[in-house]
Image 1: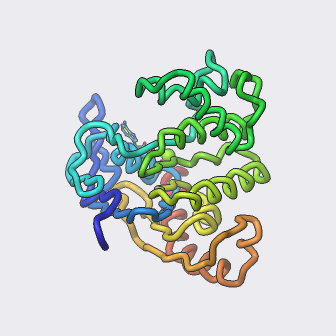
Image 2: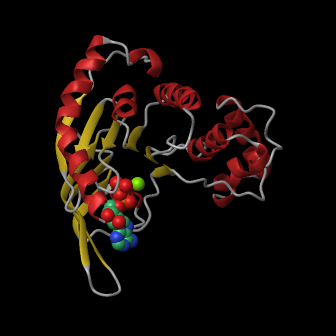
Length: 267
Ligand SMILES: Nc1ncnc2c1ncn2[C@@H]1O[C@H](COP(=O)(O)OP(=O)(O)O)[C@@H](O)[C@H]1O
Ligand SMILES: [Mg+2]
């Protein structure tokens, strides 16, 4: 591969609790994302997906391993990346528009220019006319759209998403997934999309990486998704090739899901 947009190499993360107990969430995990590539990471709940993303964001220092961003070692926060987390990240005291301008303010962009750009982004995510609303006056799907605009307005080269749509109902979720694909295809950035939902992973991605159940989670399979684009995430699920890929990847995942389930029962 040419220079990777993001390379996580041999990452090991061991958490040490206050009583000294050690838990190795990830062991020797390597993940490389090419410029413009859309990669999903799937794995059972609790396997270490968020941990891996936090390492990529630069919020969590791994116990071992290297992180390179466009071939530069990562030091501190990953400034080339924008993030979208599972939990709500909007500031409740700011309007939708003011939430979208937040990052630009931080970058000291001229306020009227920031407001104009934010207005454009709200349009692009289907929220033209909602700029003056506060987060509590918006639906869950609308808040996600604001968060998406808030991330994309900064034009990050790498977009890191941690189960961003998992709290949405299925229809809203599919709308958002299609919108995400449309925005992504307009100026392809590198995307790492974390999900526990295999169908979501296949329908969005160029490549799906399957993580094993923890502890010591690591990739156990990598699958190229050769489905044509543009895709409609609801329709593509009916394609015979989708079903083939789903069967293939599920075979790799199933044991890990069962292991993780059995472990949870014991707790
Ligand atoms: N700060 C932490 N301290 C101790 N253990 C942690 C910490 N963060 C995560 N873990 C553990 O690491 C494992 C992986 O967590 P996480 O990455 O959140 O999983 P996922 O996102 O795949 O559901 C879990 O067993 C979790 O309890
Ligand atoms: Mg998680």
